[in-house]
Length: 510
Image (cartoon, rainbow, N blue to C red; front, top):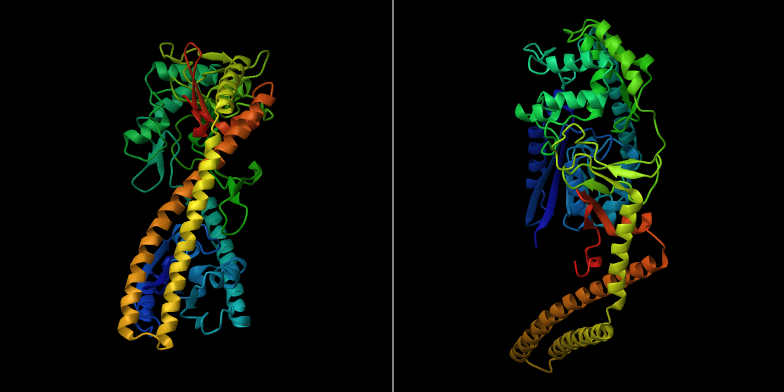
């Protein structure tokens, strides 16, 4: 059987500036080391490469793939050029070195640190290794601070450029932002309409009437990657219009440093106070004047929606429009209802004006669930449990036969050692036993698979019956039932309903 050796290679953005840390150099060092390993025979070598990832956390695709194989027991040894390639966080690296790798019997080797867990008998390397971890971690923190400081210096000089331009702009030949002749007029139109007092939904309707593609559709038309725009149909979202109206960059002012990461190496960001933003006036050509921006802003406040508290209701996040596929909005004023806001700008859309009362929808769904529960509880299958008992007895019988056969093989070997039978007799009788043992193991495997399936079916049936009983005890739809049973509910014109079940086995007869 081959021993699987994993070579882990990591190169961060900063490491790429140092030739000794290059991916090619790391591969060369690791493969040379493997070629000289005499204590492992029949080596199968796998490479795992994370290019451009920080070592301060383990949110890296290649290292996650490697750790999954470790947990599956498919890796015997991991080799890295030095500790920093595997990680720069002393706590997380120590956890894998002390707990995970010894648990799965994985040997860990760091070449430059002269560390081999086999030689140290699964010890973590003592004070020397711990000191290297801490130095590496402090190096990362210091590097992060220096990188952030350099970035902010560039901010204030107006040198730092984002990779992505806002809608209405494009990258010029020198890498700076310049107005996009195709989309800049659309931005001006949005601001001009807002300055006249038009609301966001009214602007959306006008953009659709003029056949102006959404920002996502425009990106796709230019061959750029974007979200799924198949449902857009040139219908803008009101939120997209409001984002454009709130963006001061269209006046030529560049804004940077609006967010910051919560911790070194982390990916979670938080919004900074506006007083800490870096604003550079006349940084790039303006699409609109500052006066037009101010006029639009004075009108925007009129139709900005106030921040509402999150409300809880059974069908939260479950109701979608069957016509355009977008989530339906819920209005709680008066009698709560769901309606399709997306196609308000398209009067000839099949789902234009689609609306359904929340009580009507909940009642309809509860009646469907109650009907399903009645069907489930009326299913009489008393023989099923007996069938499972017979299957378990059958499996136990094959387990015993395999055990007896192996015992017979052991006794045969003991007779050979005691010289009660000759070598030829032993080989001949063992061959007969091996044939029977293989036959029994194959049957045992088939029966075990059948038993496992029957047990899973029995468990599913028990869960289904438990849910059905719970439905009969309730007076109406509950959030718990919806979360367990329903994935989505599509509403079509005429209040036709389609349920996408989360628990497929519950929809008997549908």
